[in-house]
Length: 138
Image (tube, rainbow, N blue to C red):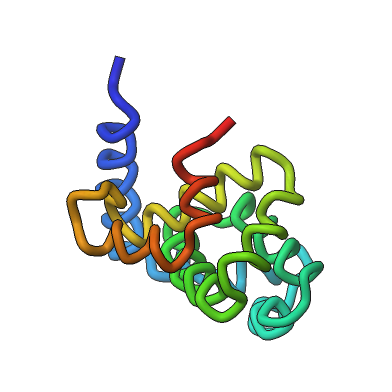
């Protein structure tokens, strides 16, 4: 049985190749629009509104691999803007499936968050509640 890390590496290789070959696949605004969502407007509203942030978290379920790359960077930016407490409160209010997908998107964006690297330590200091959710999954 392949490890979770091996599966993630394989997924990254496939998605990077697919995105390079077909840039339209990564059109996150287009993917959201197919579900009636104005992506730029949702991102803007998610900066201050909990329901909009919750809606933004749900988008992770409809993105393809290429769209997920853009989604992860916007998600991290929203975490930085909203702050640890408010972001974690919304994160804890979504379903376990959505929560797991959001945390996976953050991990993809950040890379390894073990305590042996400065990125991991910095993230854990800045966002202790979200970090706790990452490392203590139900």
